[in-house]
Amino acid sequence: YHTYAKGVRNGPDPSLVYRPHLEKEDGKDRAEYRNFESGDLIDRVYSTYKMMHTNQTLDFVKEKHVTWTDCNHTRMTMMESIEALNQLVDESDPDVDFPNSYHAFQTAEGIRQEHPDKDWFQLVGLIHDIGKIMALWGEPQWAVVGDTFPVGCRFQSSIVFRDTTFVDNPDDKNPCYNTKYGIYKAKCGLDNVFMSWGHDEYMYRVMKFNNCPIPEEGLYMLRFHSFYPWHCHGDYMHLCNDKDLQMLPWVKEFNKFDLYTKTTHLPDVEELKPYYQSLIDKYCPGELCW
Image (cartoon, rainbow, N blue to C red):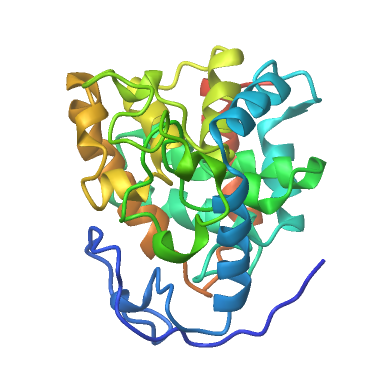
C-alpha cells in the first residue's frame, strides 16, 4: 500500500473544536490538528476532497444506500474487521499517516481513561472508523473517508475547501438542491437527511442491521462523528429536531477523543485486545453481516 513521509503539520486549527484535557504529545500542539492549509499530506488531502465534493450528489448517495445498506457483502467478526483496517491509510486525514486500526485503539483508550464506567462509549471509540473497510472492497476513498455534509440542500461555507471544490458538483447549480432547505423541511431531523456517503453512515447501518444494542448516544457518535460542519461549526441547525440537539453534546464529547488521540505513539494492540474483545462479545458478538 502507499507509504507517506512523516512530518510536522503547522498552522492554525480552522475547526475550532473541543480541546480535551490531554497533554501535548510528540511535539504536536493541539492547534496543529485538522490543519487543511499546510503540511506534508495536504496535496493528498485536497485531492480526496476535490473528488468527494465533485461526485457526492443526492443521486449518488441514494445509489450507495442501495449498494451497501442491505449488508450483504460478507460476514466477519468485529475484531476481524478492525484488523482489516491495517491495510488502510485514510487519504483525507491531515493528521494521520499510520494505519487506522491503531487509531481505533488510541481513541478507545482515551475514552476508557476519562469514561471508565461507559463501556459502550469505549466500544464506539474502537469501532467508529471500521466503515472505512468499504475502501478495501472497491469504493474510492472519496466515498468512504473525510468530513460529511448533507446533500439535497445548499453546501454550507464551513465544509472544508468549500470555495474551491464544489464547482463541478451539479447539485450546487440545481435550484431544487442549492437553497437553504433544499428538499427538506425545517427541523425535519438528521435521521431524515441524506448525508454524503461515507464510513459514518455505513457503520451506523451495520450496527442497526445486526441489532447491536449500543445506546442511541453511541449510534449518533458513529453516524455523525465526521459531520464537522454541524458538531464543530454549528451549521445545519435549521434541519435539527430536539433529539438531534440532545445528542449533539455526546457527539462533541466523542470528537475530542477521535481527534486529539491521533499521535504517533502507537498502542500495544495485542495487550489491549482481550479487554476490547469482551466489549465486542457484549454488544456485537460473533459474525456480523457487512
